[in-house]
Length: 592
Image (cartoon, rainbow, N blue to C red):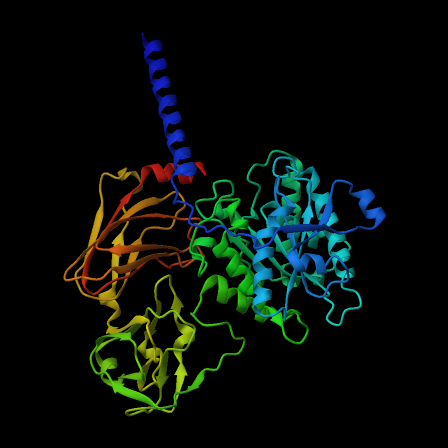
């Protein structure tokens, strides 16, 4: 009888374990947002021109090939070598096809056409015969050596040209990104053969499935080299993760190691990338239009006008990547932007003395400068927040020194703004700008387009609200809630005690609006200050919006920052924020 009871308990325990594992796997494979990536299309028929390799090289690597991507007239013209553009080499990943280069290659070609081929990129791709290197790592070293030979072959295709390149940029998908990093471990490899490395959904930290010693040894060799030689590695590297849609490679595996003496590496999740703002699965990261457009914009901003190749200046490289992949100020990239701007011309100057102000611009015939005197506001408030729904790239907000009713020159604060899907916004701490006498908001003359500009002064404590998250084992049965009663435009909800991978929550934001006739949009941004993995949710209010809150990277032990739910709200609405533990997502986090 006792043994029978024990067996029943064991059976019940195993059944519970199987149920929990199933629930966790369901969350990993199905519990994510829908695919919001737009498909990238070719405008003309894609062509892959096989590059003839030296006979000895072709004989040594009979299964591998090198191709040049092209479309239409570009493909026809480039069948006759040498080439005249900027070389980029695409490396496919596990079971990947060399034809995956077509999305980014086609977008780059369209961009070059837009500027009449002042600059253009030549996209090459390696055919690894779709080897399963994530399952068997025996081919990884061979692929690395072949890529080294391909780089040398590519550079020879430009021989004799006036602006012949001396290096190539590499885009590596999945294991292709690891192969690119492994190039630096080769004895005869010269680091200056690569000017930029961008990896997409590459598991840098460890293999997803360490099935054999070849994979684990390869990883150990690559990562040890990069850590031990970090001081001497000047290769600018960007790792882009797919986010929670990518269940094949968890985004935490894609983050390059943070070393105090290696500042040329960036890691970011696609949901945090400006103008992308979507999570991608493991394959869609190579064709997601939003992300590929961002990548190509960065490539063109990286060009040095003198050499007509990608710049060799590491500071500029990081500056461009930060502009396009980390924080976009709703301005075109400038290497040395003008901080002081002339505020001239026949314009109206309108003083604004209230602490909260809204202006709706529609068919404006005159340029208007709205001036906000700061002296009195400094006595009462700590911060000022402004936002505009006009998403052009012109400067729109300035600071003036010792001005009365108008000023001739102003400090261009537009570079400190942040682009969001429906607004560009700026928050300033007043004590950081003691020399500014006025804040100036510029409204250009517009015809037929309507946009709204808002500004408000506030005390920080009125917009920072603490919300402790619920306990791990509350199983979603209990919740915690805050209500935003004041009519502000911006709030920070501090999610206290949230910093571990195994934590997961559902946050519900209910908005109730009064007297609203037009459609209003609110933005809820989960901001993780210790890594670039933010995610945004756009909601039409009034509404009830559910947000998944979980992490890719745990909070470092020596980091005291707090995760934030940044809320860009409407002053006509009241918001109620509720957080509760999501047990199914916790199982998904543990399972992944």
